[in-house]
Amino acid sequence: MKFYEGSVGDKMARYKGGKLPLSDVLRYGADLAQGIMDLHAKDIFILNLKPFNFLLNENDRAVLGDFGIPYVFLGVALTNTEMTRRLGTPNYMAPEQWEPEIRGPISFETDSWGFGCSIVEMLTGILPWSGKSVDEMYKLVVKKEEKPHIPSGLPPAVENVLIGCFEYDFRSRPIMADILHAFKSSQNAVYQDGGWMGPGSRMIREKPGGSGYTEWFLAKDHLQVGDMVRSRKSRGSCNPENMDVPEGTVVGLERDTDQDGFVLVRVHGIHDPIRVHVSTLERVTFGLAAGDWVRLKTEDRKHSPVGVIHSITRDGTVAVAVIGLETLWMGNYSEFQMAKPYCVGQFIRLKSNVFSPRFDWPRKRGGEWATGRICQVLPNGCLAVKFPGRLTFSDETSSFLADPAEVELVSFNTCPGMVKKYQHLEDFHWTVRPLLIALGLFTSMKFGLFVGRKIGRSKNKKGPNHAVQNGQNADGSTAGNTAWRPPKVTNIFR
Image (cartoon, rainbow, N blue to C red; front, top):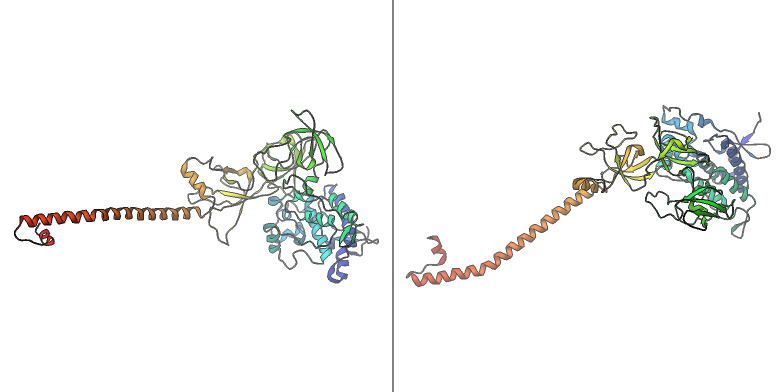
């Protein structure tokens, strides 16, 4: 066994402000990325990356000194909230690492977040979320989706990959091969005349199409000649879109090693192959693609039967993220069937045959399940739901979670009768009912004033004619009677 005299954390403590020179950070970063990538190739998650776990050898090269220990505790019931430290050090933990069975699962990209936190600490000398309690860090990272601050002045390739490391959705983060390439290419970059020159100085361009996917998400789908492909839908879209390539076969690659290139796709009904940018296509294998919603044909009570495909190989091996599992579910494509996707903005409620849901869910006054609006879809298909139709206060839960297998869509088209449609209208915001009541009162008051004015005008029109008639009667009475009396006195004797 080798003996190491110190760690990167120990070396940082000897520098003023705890910051390391950029050249050291780039060298250590490349060493660590290579080591992490080798462990990932053996299906080992580190989950506890931090400077004090990076040992230094006699040649001042970084070596991983603590890896895989938190992974051992995955699946073990934790009796204390403080035991979350077993799954890593809170300052360096990714959002899905806090509650992997709910917001996960754990993946290789989880280590990308911890790597990014470690690099930022080496550059700044400041511990991520320094001075915050465990509960405060949980709220910042998981609830508020805040990210560590990345210092300026870095080589563009390194800055770009660090930004990617802190994507909330782990599918949008770079893998270690991307990180290794960025750090290696930046080691020879030179800062000159206010800018970086040489390899690693080019910022990665944004892909055409504006589909909402990050560069790192798209880079994971490598196309080959013979692959079945289709146009990639906009991220988070449930509506059918006009596809340039509903389904086709790749027949040529312009640059087979460059993900910025174009491919030639043969589409049924079109004579000549069409030239399409790689980022606008997704590979389809046995009718499935990464990001598709699927349902297990054989259900297991331990986890949800509905999940989202993380990846699918060309031989049909599928990795699926589902609620209830801390890691990706691995299986064959034949074990799944397509499921209905859910998107942000849709209204849902629990199915009537669900009596004991996986997560807490509010009820209406009559005992029926309340209707909520999806505000976020997590990578494993877990739905974060808010209830704009309910007036909540600061001490109440602002959002709830839902298992997609236990809910159903609610819309005006599915609501039978006017009463149900009105009740769904109230689900849009809690102010709908008071506004309609106020509008009804205002309308009634305006109608009452209008009727009152109409009656007043009719009385005013009758007044003069009635007076003339009384005058005529008075004159007639004077002609027939010798003793004249005033009209009011005459009325007394009537």
